[in-house]
Amino acid sequence: MKKYLLLLHEDIEKMQQLSPKEMEELGNSHMAWAEKLGKSGHLISGEGLEENSVQISGKNSIVKDGTFLESKEMIGGYYLLQAKDLKTVIELAKGCPCHLYGGTTEIRPIMEYEE
Image (cartoon, rainbow, N blue to C red; front, side):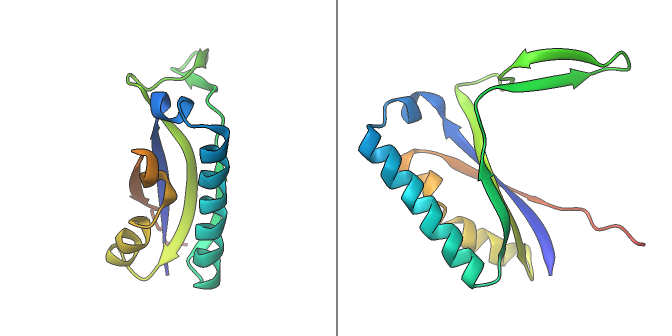
């Protein structure tokens, strides 16, 4: 099966406006969705990501702190999935709980290298 990275793009402002109960419900929804993906054999791994990040760039390895997206969006987490094809992953991604509060998912196929 082919591997796919599912990046969860979330609206920072919308996430900050969620009540503690809504945050708990969202977390529970992610756990239930991950369990469903695991039982179907599609889940390899997945985690939430903290807002802060470090960027290293250029031949001099310049280190910068921050959140680097130029918008009000952040990558809040990821799932690493496996499936027979992109069509299958698209259907799986439609059920991602990040969509409940205006988030979007980005699917990135993992390159396969010949050994």
